[in-house]
Length: 189
Image 1 (cartoon, rainbow, N blue to C red):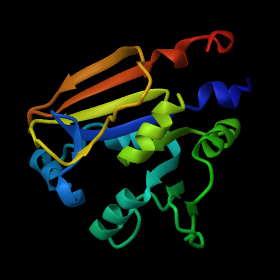
Image 2: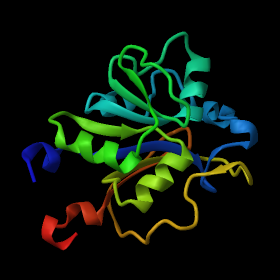
Image 3: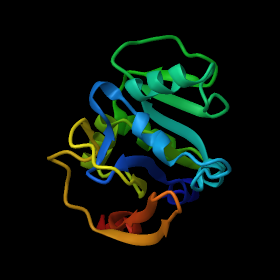
Image 4: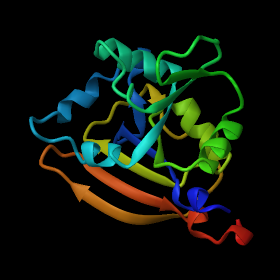
């Protein structure tokens, strides 16, 4: 395994309700605003400096685009995972191929970490394929009861190592886990 592969990690950085929903029905993410606080980004600006590649689902991408005049990750190599082919827009590539193949190809390139920015279908497929190395989960202090579940049935059992846990004044709790398979030497994976 090359040095780039050993150092470049696939990191899920995402927020959910306490009951593990990442969106309310109809892809409504309004609950995220309940923890907005001026001057507090919950470590996001520090995290985003450690990545140069974004993996994002088409629904999540569409939501982000509707919130701002341009894609917030336009300065990074971004892959929108979609079923509908579209021409690239700057650094944003609309990817219709095999997700595992894309991740393995990206990990072979030198670079910073790879940020998985949702959605649930992408997250669960990457977990099924054992392709996520770390999880940074911000838990919003709300129970939604329904919507889009972050984790679905069918993902493999995975042992995690808690790297850090931080509670914020807003009630948000951020958990940073390393996936233990990522900590094992290559021969034992």
